Image 1: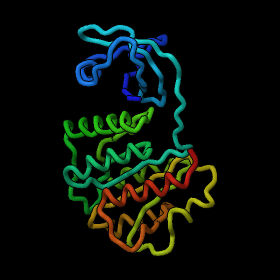
Image 2: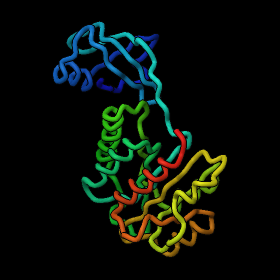
Image 3: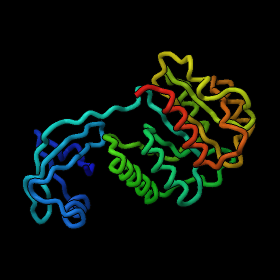
Image 4: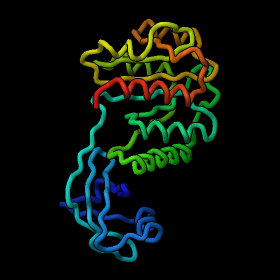
Length: 242
């Protein structure tokens, strides 16, 4: 059954309202009508079975019939990734949202090729994340942050408790994600750092290691940014509880 986003302020006292682009899509494209049942979600982790009661020229109004169960990973997995060029970043955002990444922060490294994102592009990326939640029946929306430098992020995360910071690095040969996650306890956040295609520079690696970051291998092949991000994220998510 289709799964559509409704902003939290438009869900009150078991009544929902859909307007604007979403209204046009449901009525004129998908041809939903009075009496039809749909799945809706509020982007905050809540998903509902609902019924359309009224369709006017500008909005849909309906009733919440029941709350649906949605399970987030028990550990929040965030992705701090270099920005690949063009549509490769669109793809990375979509797939990260689909597999269950909690937050994606575009990260600026010393060897990054793309160092900024325009306001219009950032808004488009957020729409891609929202669309991916609708497509895969996810009840929340993966947050996409402002581009931030690697060292600024480290300064913040050093203070974060119950956190595991993972950094895939081509010079690491032994330590893998499954080995690393085998004995973790009381971890609430896992942060994955994906460097640019030129790799991390020595200062970045030294600073990360001094602050208890864990380097891991993703195999012998050198992966593109978006490939490494999804491979690392998938392995992490497959080794934690939902």
